[in-house]
Amino acid sequence: MEVSFKPVWFDSFGAKSSCTLVKTPDVVILVDPGAAVMQPSFPASWADKIRWLGEAEAAIRKAGEDADVVVVTHYHYDHYTRDPAFYEGKLLLAKNPNEYINDSQRKRAERFFRDLWKHFLGKELEEMMERKEEKEYPNPLDELKHSMSVDFGDYAERRQQLLKKGMKWFRKRVKNWNSWPKIPELESKKLRVKFADGKSFKFGSTHIRCTRPLFHGIEFSRVGWVFALTVQHGNEKLLYSSDLDGPIIEDYADWIIRENPSVLILDGPMTYMFGYLLTRTTLNRVISNVCRIIEETDVSLVIFDHHLPREPKFKQRLRSVYELAAEKGKKVVTAAEYLGRKPKVLELVS
Image 1 (cartoon, rainbow, N blue to C red):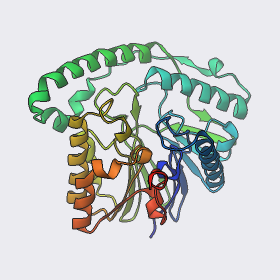
Image 2 (cartoon, rainbow, N blue to C red; image 1 turned 135 degrees about the vertical axis):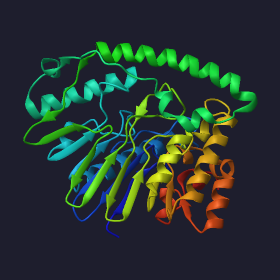
Image 3 (cartoon, one colour; image 1 turned 180 degrees about the vertical axis):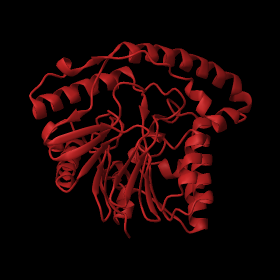
């Protein structure tokens, strides 16, 4: 294969992460080099959780040694490493911290870029920040033609209420984006930073295509936005979804189907929050979308992992996905299973 990959660390190994190393004949790309400790409900001791986190961080540091390009799709701690030295000698393709970002991720991004500017240029970030020009941000629902046309039946009224609240929240975020000083991209001898949202990058015959900002989960998810990406060399494509939580949104599944990847690194729904932040309606959307992806693409391998193996019933909750994959002769597995191992959460309850 011209596009190969290695799961560096994933949730199925015992710590939160979806760090992936992608290699082509032209470039080595490390995607989302971060890790975080598992949630309190994860059925393991605190000592084990901390040990697995340490192992994850060591594996990510090791993988970073080989990378030419590092991609950070958003500023949750399980998706980026905060140590500036980690990025030395790299091109960093990062989520734009100035727009389509929630307040908590903006604060994390400020700390991150402050450390990068200090480490690589010896300057204070605040000295380089500019006043942001006023900009119009269209209603993001206008881009979700499929999602907005779905018949939600008895749930339709409640959905409209939630979308209305979400739009009010979005407008408040727009005011913030238009008032915050702008964090600039960085250019130094030892690090280049480019904000990647909606952009494409070429390395020889390898193309990296990054999406516009996408909701982290459901429409107007309060945890913010991410970008997903496709790495293509010739006819081979690897698609990395970042945190689409399923995907939940039908238009995002449509995009994956249009891309028609050879390999799909797909995060799943947060089934460990089922009945709390994950409703039956939302889970059914995920199941339908993933089944469509399996049915309508030529993908042969789906690494279906991040968020999913944080509780032992994830395969039962998505039974129809696994049944359809088996029927179609397609491989849908966790990263641990891809490497011939059992997901940690299933080891713990067996």
